[in-house]
Image (cartoon, rainbow, N blue to C red; front, side, top):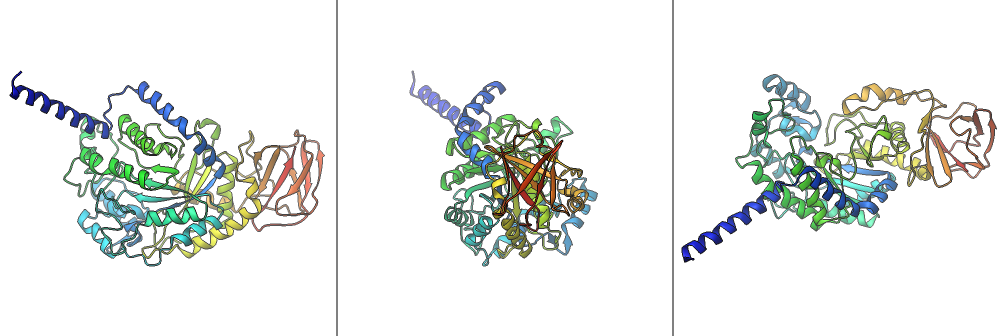
Length: 499
């Protein structure tokens, strides 16, 4: 064999190895669907303990924070709602009104938006204070955006200089500080990562190529106004997968929260899941990794499952305190403490997990109403947490005359008033070991509670959480009558029925 031919063979082998490695990084692993599902199920086995803890924890804090906190929902004198109307009229592209989408909704050029990094110096940010707030609110874990759709990283990324340490005058690793504070207060720590959308570096996320094949391809989140020059494959190889490796290798992450998987192939979704498993096998991954992969499900933003029996995974509702995830300076439509109690109880009674969001402003401050309402909610949980943590769903999750459907962020007006119309006969249930908990938001006027759903249970005693006073109960036909000895909370009560 000639030296020239040997060189060609070596070069060909090298090129094949490079192409194979690139294909693996971008998800082209040439596995059949059956092979991917088999491998996925094998990987999931390492998550059993982590998912059990997740199910028991029930309640956590979500934090959306980044450069978008500086404009706070406005750009060049127009609100994001005004920009939304203009974008729809001029391009036909719909875009959300939540503040963290300001770059796309207002069609801000990448270079112009990146100038916000020069202003990002949140001197009021206090990771310890935020972790203490989560603890005081009764939360068991915390998840923050490590990189949102704008492509800006809130940690010190060695992969890409567009990050909070290298690109801002602040020069502090926000993620690391929060991780440290969470460990101090016994909170599990997790990270959000926008794997598919990246308006700085992901070009147009394959949209044009996919649209040529299928004109109905969703344009959700596409950078159509100023896409980067690189290809989407180069974004995956040079930023997305390397940054996922970074955050999972450098931080102790219990929960990895992917987002917006529209247009992702099964192979890519599988690769994003596998990347998480390779670097942190016990970290649970949400199903927004795409294509039904993931360890737990997200029914939707500000949405509670109407039929939890139809859902085949552990699930988590993510919700906002007002109507935006990122800080929106003019949105003062805060959920009341009673609403928050309802959200938590409705979700937990159905076997779900609630992650409630805060959006610090550009200086790092958490809006005052967020702090106040979370602290009050924490007082309710201090009294009634036994009926929340570590509980499971009963066959009957609620009895009573009031029906409330919670169908998403834009549907709040349809149900927020109904929360104030709950009656004394509206009672939710959870259970743990030999105990059944009956949770009510409203007190009966005569302090006499009638519980119908437990009439056939062999109840041996009843107690009122937060009270040492004796509770008397009587079985009367198709209900159990209980006399409340006192009021222990401004936002209802919990009765503990022991079998």
